[in-house]
Every structure is written in structure tokens, then in C-alpha cells.
Image 1: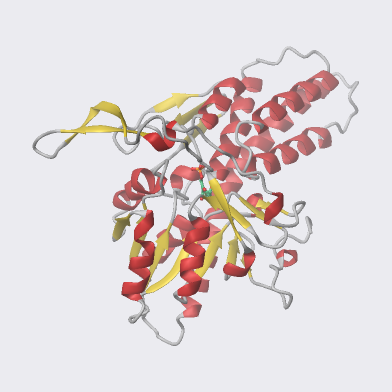
Image 2 (image 1 turned 120 degrees about the horizontal axis):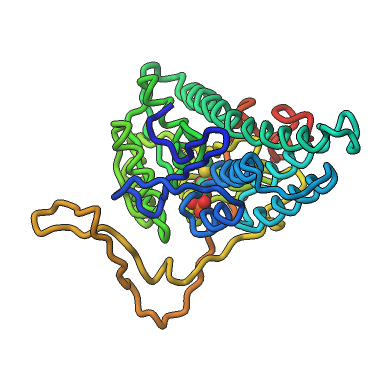
Length: 387
Ligand code: MRU
């Protein structure tokens, strides 16, 4: 696992790296209550589908461990946990990991009532069941990501079997690395694994306007890991692909997901759809890396996905650290500046939906999902219990 950690947890204590301050300053916030977690997620101090779910689950675990549950009976504890989880679910609507984690946690506390709710130890049993299930989400996520890295790197390598020793270049969007997960990352995890195995020629990352997850966070991770990489703005992707067309030197676009629905339509960071169209036009593989926690089999098509719309200021203003006259950056002096006429109308959807027709493969921790004869993705093989 990389040294970068978005989430630091030990039983009773949760610290979350404030991603609004990156890449200039590494500051951890202590998150001890559901309200603090809600605020941390809503304000995007922590973001990325798996990380959001983990922080919500663990913040409530810390709350329960530290005795912040006044409910007396086991039944009241269950109701208390349910209502806290329902509250946390509203923090950000598009990523399904949070909602899947909540279902898992609610199931875990109900499964723990083995002796019956009236049993004198039932209250403690339920609290412990919650804490253990929340901690398991953190551990499982790291496992998921390393698996995705291996499956994704192997699959990409297989696409180039005709040319042994061929290293591939990959373009990614947004941030899907250690900062968006418990560690290693999903799409960025595949890039990391390709690099570790000597199979990566070069990584390209998009700036990812308007929140700049690519320039602020992915660049930071790539530099930190010494992965050969280049930052481009979102509007440069078409030019990059066309320059590489003759040499076929961009092997794949690899992105993460906030919600993959039953037919494979995928909600991810705004701009992903544009990349998929461009990739198809240029004959470049388009790969989604998504743990099964990001898959929503209840929703049939992308039309059913709620897309979060965010504040106008994320587009009309920007903050950053002050650059001194000698070119050095002063991380202690940050400034917020206007970059548009503040009266302009703004539309700021945080995500878009890429139709499954434009996706070549979906890499999960249980394997690579490809399309059935009807053109839809065959999730049955990787998640038979939820199919
Ligand atoms: O708005 P964000 O930064 O939470 O959006 C993040 C993304 O879109 C990621 O691609 C997705 O959550 C996958 S993170 C492993």
C-alpha cells in the first residue's frame, strides 16, 4: 500500500485527510460524529465513492465506541443506528457505495440478534456487530483495490499479447487512487500495478474541472509514486488521442465509477462520457474499474441515476496556494480567486453517465466483466449472490 492515506482509523478514532488543502498541505481532521462525517463528505474534504462510504461507516463506529448512543434497549439501538445511517446517506447522492455499505451494516446488526432482542447482552452484541462490520468495510476495500489492480493490469496486458514487451500508456480522469479509497485505488490502482510490473509506458491525467481532482489529487499521487505522468486539461484529450493515433501509443482510458447499473451504464466524474466518445472514435479501449460495492443491480439503466448538482462557486471561483516571485509555492498562504463574472448562470453537474455501449470492460475485485451477446454486461459471474 502507498504511504498516502486518506483515512486513518484505529478503534475509537478516525482521522480524515482534508483533500481541499491538497496538494499544498497535509492536514488530518478528527472525525468523531455522524454530523462531522456528513460535513466532511458534503464539503468534499473526503471524496471518491469508496472513501465516502468508509468514512460514513467508521464515523458512526467511533460514535458508538465512544458511548455516544443513549439508547437503552437493543431495539432502540437498532433504530438509533438506522436513523444515523439514513442521515449519512443523504450526504452525497450519486455514489452507490455509501448506500450499499448502509444496507450491509443494517443487515449485520440484525444478524447479530442471535439470542433475541430481550437478552441482557443484546445491546452490546449489536454495538459490537456494527463496529466489526464497519471495520470490515475498510479492510475489504483495500483487498478489492489490489485485486482490481491485478485483474485490470493483466487484462490490459492480454490486449497487447501480439506485441510482447509492449508497455502501454493509459489516460485517467478524476482521482481514483489512495485518496479516493482505503489505499491503492481502483483505476489509479490499475495504473499503479502496471507501473509496479514494468508494463506502464506513461500515465496521462486530466485536470478534471471544476473541482480539479486530477490536477490537485491524481497529479499529487503520481508524483508521490514517481510514476511517469503528464497532466493535461480536459479539453486536450481529443488532441492527445489524435496525435497518438498513428503510433497507437495510448492503450486505454481507465476510469473509476460512482455507480454502475445493471446494464453497465456508468456514472462517474463529469467529463467521463466525453472521454468515452473520444476513445471510441480513436479506437482506444475504455475500461471502468469498479469494486462490486459501486455496482447497483437494482437500477436497470443510467436513466435511473440521480446526478448530484453542486454549488456555482465551484465553477466561478478557485482556490490555491500563493506562488512567490521566484516560482516557489507558499503552502501557508492560500487564496480564493474569482475566475468568471460572478453573475453568470452556472450548471454544475458533478457526474455524467457513460452508456455501456462505449465501455469495453468493467474490472471488479472478482474479475473482469465483459459483455454478453445482447451487448449488456454480465455481472452474474462476479456477483452471483446479488444477481
Ligand atoms: O466528486 P468525487 O471526487 O467524489 O468523484 C469521484 C469520482 O468520480 C471517482 O471516479 C469515483 O468516485 C471512483 S473513486 C475510486
